[in-house]
Image (tube, rainbow, N blue to C red; front, side, top):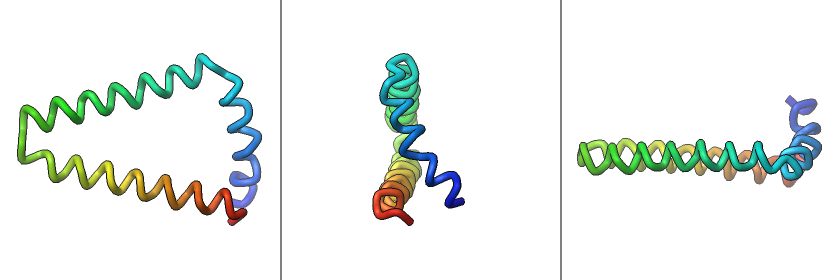
Length: 72
């Protein structure tokens, strides 16, 4: 696990310089958000599930980035 985390800054630098990859990631995130939004509008009861999934994902990303930035 530490080997992977040690490579994260280098991978981030490569990604930051690769505009095409960044655009593809943003397009993918936008598509997922659009599908989630349409699902909530079509099935109102799905709102709680989707909000829970987004919150779990954001919490996980936040703790991952916090761990990386603190060197864990």
